[in-house]
Length: 237
Length: 237
DNA sequence: GAAATAGTGTCTTTTAGACAATATCAC
DNA sequence: GTGATATTGTCTAAAAGACACTATTTC
Image 1: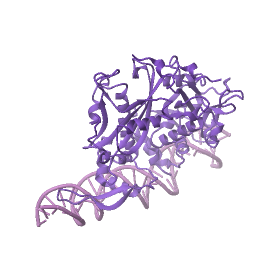
Image 2: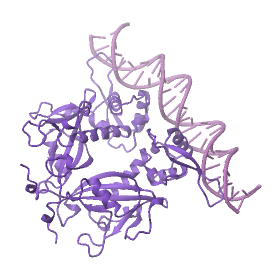
Image 3: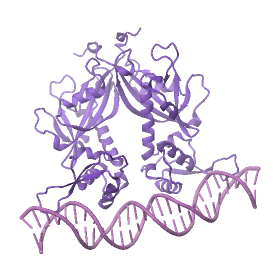
Image 4: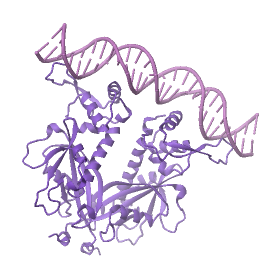
């Protein structure tokens, strides 16, 4: 007969971490929190939304992650994806071996309510990547690295960047975010040609409003029926 | 002060599952075990190498997974990668909510010792994918699906298939395994041209030995210094 | 019309793909 | 030489990329 308490000394702590990402001012930004000076663990460090997994409260890790995120951000998540699961005593060294199931969430900047009452701030991912591990709580620096790498890698061979753009966007918007994520120039003509042929996007018929005196750009949306492939990485400048 | 036992009723079970894969007779095969009739849980089902994560025994999930695999397979793992982490009561319904950290391992068929004393068998992945979930222990069917999808997806945009080939292989070997994994024909000329230009492979100077009277093929190895991209998916028949 | 960016046409170079030709081995 | 598969050459069609040109807006 199975008795759960027989294994009380064997089970590790389990937690989830979620990296919420938007695209703003030409770069990725992540929602980070400064932990208070009097925090029991990791005072005065940066942390991302996270929570302890409690089998009495949560049916699944995704549920725990979704909850932990929704109490922090009041906006629709356009892409939610599991990253890696980290494990080891190093994650929470003063406690016990911890399993950290990491996720990232992409949101649209124009749907975020910026002036919320929480202490969270949308900080530049590139800036944070330059900061030492020990300025972050738990293993949150490595989770950020994982998220950044995954997003940039996926930008190479999928249109994942669209999850960060408004529902209506221009070809140039899409081209530019791909260039940022790929760290590579892209030939505009080839990009437009391939994009048009791929069937990934649909013309809305609307045009972008511009303050300056210039030709407005056509606005597009994602084709919900798109089933093909789109490889930005195959297009170079 | 942190007292681990305060959370005894909160922690889920944690386990690891490893999907060991080889390429044999033109298809992927996975090492599966038939669970005995008198097993306490999931008698008479198929299972893949797995173990319970014990914080007193294991420093990390990778360590647990590597151990669980090494007691089953006596061969070098050429690629080891985390898949997803699954969670829920459904994984082990008679016990408690379980976190299952899944991995896959690629091995070279020619390095496997086939006639080991264990009851494990290398079974066709495609055959197993056609079998109902409840013929498998725990959530092992969904783990197999995850592994299969990941490997096939990666074959589209990376040379992951090389981990399944012998150290020395022909261009045709590589082409054929890619076709199998991608489920797509590939143009041989284009494949050879792109491959040569990519710098992914190095000529060994040796030639394949053939029983039949025919021209032997050049044997290649992986260029350890390769740092580029190789997208089989961009080549169609 | 001027300024500014959006988007396209055109030409050149490169690549893909079909198919034929050649290469290399055992017998 | 024959049979069989490996590998390359060649030619045509398609795609990529550079760059100039046209389009559309506001002022």
